[in-house]
Length: 489
Image (cartoon, rainbow, N blue to C red; front, side):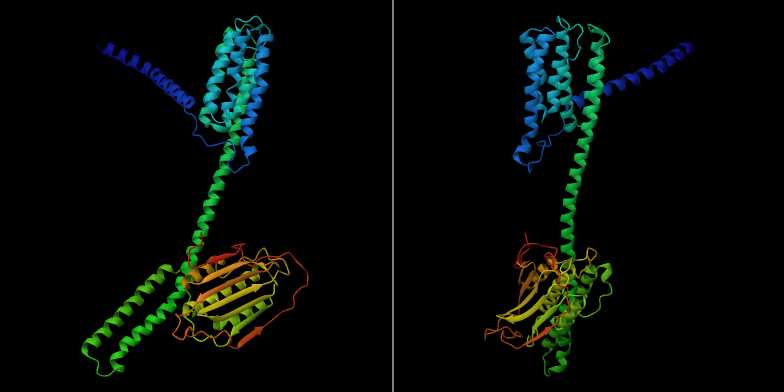
């Protein structure tokens, strides 16, 4: 009994590797069959739809040309050299060449037809009178057509499918070799090697094209994400700046509500409680605003403590621009009065960004800054001429995000923005910001009449007279853009 058990154990141990080999062979055959019967998902036409119509049809025209050249030659070779009957030669030649038209878009399906036709042709040539001394199992024209098919396969199918096709091609040739009319021809080995080279080159080209296409898609996505991030950063920056404006009003409400019982005598108890509730609500709102500001504040803006600028600092801004080498002049009415803080801040930032763009992209260009008020609106106009010297390639710093920031500030106040190049090569930025609602007299509170005296600051610096090509003063657009309080499309 123990002897029988040991014998069974040894037999099981010897058969275990065989079972593993059989299992591996079955898995390999299953994977091979899956690769040969599962074409890659269609990736559309060989060339993009954006290509001209002639280029999009070029692969199909090349396939048609290949069929037109190979079909008659194949029939001629089979009939005259291999001495096949005309009907059989025509059927085999058609089956071996016509599928090349399908190979442009469905190469794996075409391969099945061509491969079967080549094998049947090799078997048919065994009984032909002219096979002796000629290439077998593959005729010269069959080799040429098969290599063209391999090229189409390599450009469209997955790598595992290419390996499966290559192995089946070699296996078919070596299996037919024992029944060859004349041993030692070697054409099956030649096709095996050449098909492998063609598949390798085509797969390399396909992989490179896919990598380039993915990189282009990723760059497109990155550009969209960059534009979105720029927009969000500018909105957060504007929100941080407006915090001071809103906080000032909330602080005034708090102080007035707290001091009302002391300033107004004889207030009833209910009124005192109402003022206390208003003050408490205002203080709670200020607390919530500080928390919101902490969320919006970026790492680099933790130290922003300076008051927000307004039109009162335009003179210093223009003088700084002149020191940077840009001859600029400022036209600013002296009777603007008290402007809404959001409008005052937005107008200053628009001028600041426009002048920064002139310094960066149109060095030395004559620039004019004009500010005026009338009809309940504040008008800001910045116009520069063509650059008199080439812009510095290293100059990339700025105060904001160009036209993105301008648009967002205009949207904040409900105004309009118009930007675009000028015929002489300069650039124009025009913003129209609404002031407070019109009073019964028809004028905006705090808005000066358009005929008010103007205090003009005109400053210029010597510039070179060398003429250069025109350069616009902004990198965000090259065409007129209009913003009316809506998100640009």
